[in-house]
Length: 266
Image (cartoon, rainbow, N blue to C red; front, side, top):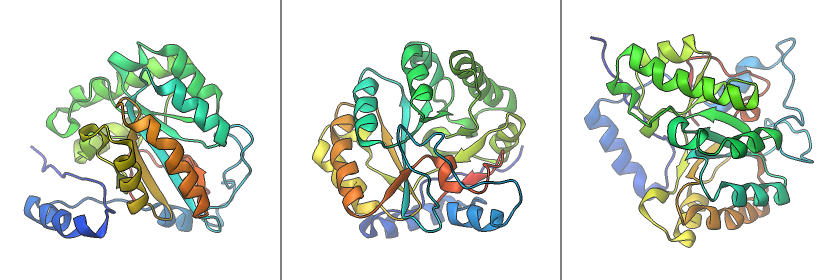
């Protein structure tokens, strides 16, 4: 049986950094990952790989270059849910693109019209498994089923299969990497999380994200919890004041294209 490698988000507020470092050391955690900046650097000058264009940036968003712009990616896990249409209304108003890592069984199948809207409005539609099982505890066939069923369900609705996936709890290993590569999926972790599953306090959620925000960051939120969607307008407003450009995860990597199986982490 191959060794298992566990991963989590890598950039946290200073007060949590020591605790996370200790936890990772105790768990023997290490994983090969690529930062957005490294992905862009590796692809710089490659023929046929354009910088991100307007496609996938949300209505009316300008072209950009994340080597020059102060880019950040807003991502949402485990939806869509009942509050996702309200979130989409605000994203459209602010012309902010996002990446949505969708759950298959009880979300994609329940809200196909929202999935269709996500794609139609230029957001990035990505895979968060079928039932949110920890992939590092499954065998290859089970991993393939968790990811493959969601790929198929999203393709049936939008006409395209996702290129990105986020493993539940950020837990991954060599078997997950192998199946992801087989299915054409890159793995995406994060640098900022509000732990919004543990609170309905929208102001606290906003504060946690703003405390952790940084250039080339990937923000993790969940559009299925009561406190999250109300926190988003304040997060967007403050980050715009700080000079950030919102992009999808794929746009954050441009001119590189997401590499199947690769783990991307700021």
